[in-house]
Image (cartoon, rainbow, N blue to C red; front, top):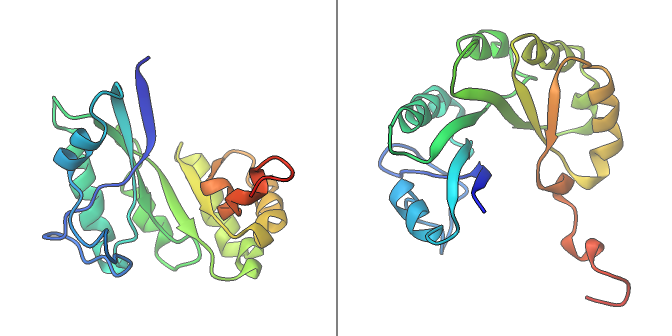
Length: 178
């Protein structure tokens, strides 16, 4: 069965500084590595997911992934880039991707649940909907109720809840299994 990987992480440490890396992930993981890791799985397309580059490298990451998408024999066909709707300048940042055949959305996290009800955040997330882009929401399980209220205020924006709201995977096991 042909598969689409909707959450592909790639990084090249010769281009980006990733502060979150630690062994055994303290090396680059490029398209070549991805192809090797997915060999035999029939992954025919993949959507790049941002890798938490420093804020000052976000545009560079976007250009990097656009170039990956433009490779005629590549598997990466679209991307979700990093962005913070709570930051000033978000509107100008995302507007540059309007109509991009490759940049399909933005992913961000919120450091405090109160940000999920911030007027600027709501305005910027509504803008994504106007631009035809989605927002990948990365929140803690404790913030899921506030996240649902946020989604209710942004009718034209498509949201994706990443990592099941970062829930404890054991919570999904049948009763009695740990």
